[in-house]
Length: 397
Image (tube, rainbow, N blue to C red; front, top):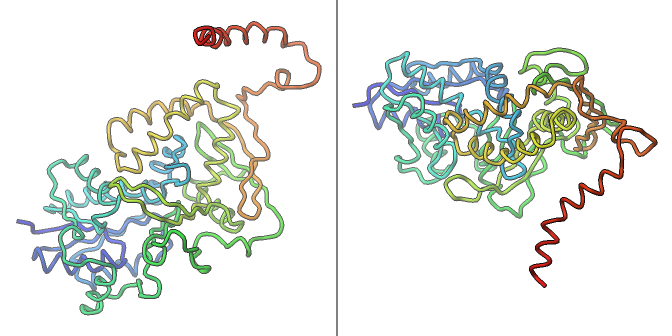
């Protein structure tokens, strides 16, 4: 028998309805948990809304610094990009939310945890894999897999009937998820992959037509793979990301419109804005280019798709992700340096990089006169590389 449930609560349509539905269905006490991940909302209002909607308690925890330091920065050290474009802004938030949810369940003596993710999406997997990894015997309730509602519109109708205030409307029924790293837009009017997103569907960044006509230069300094300062000014992890969001957003950097492959096997169209994250990804790659050995860098690049897939699928607390992270972090100890970026009309261009431990040697790279490299040595190197090609050609005669 379920007596007490801890619900991951955002104040949006799904979780607002979930409070009332859980109480009606399970006749249990519902405790709401809202994580402050920098979504830019009035979370005091969200807390009051949860209590007004029927939650017996409502926790709101400021996790912004932990989110950036312990989740976003490690992910960026692995250069994680899913299917070439998605920087995993929603994916990386779920394990932290679920972890804190389990902690509250233990503190409150709750029997179960619940989330508002649909039965079609990735988030249900991300939440639940984390629950089970951290507390194997916990009971999980996923309302979307149980209730009779079959659409977002049916949820809106239920909310109207029970006088639950929600922000989703028939005019703008798309779903959004925002944190300090990104904002995503999915569903509703975006479900036609041929349709251009509405002109007013911007949050963290400006449309290109409204960006400045002059470029701006930004210098980001890294130590052991993590950013530590912007233009010489040291800041906390969350402050760095917020500052870069402001700069990148003003210049239209970091928007992608993609059709991705969900873990459950469904193709989904999503629009993502990740201004600061895009700048950090581009800058880190530039810092790596002059500080990492060629084969080490190629090894890291070969692991990136698997590492990104593990995060996208929800395996943040899996032994394989943790093992990969240890190797990635060891590699990143060499990545200390400064990168200069130029932002202009949606472009984020690397225009300079330097590092105290740079492997770049001007004497070797120059096209001018030098006395450290004998070009005749290349002849033997090429002939050795050609041995197997010659052998294969001989066999085909």
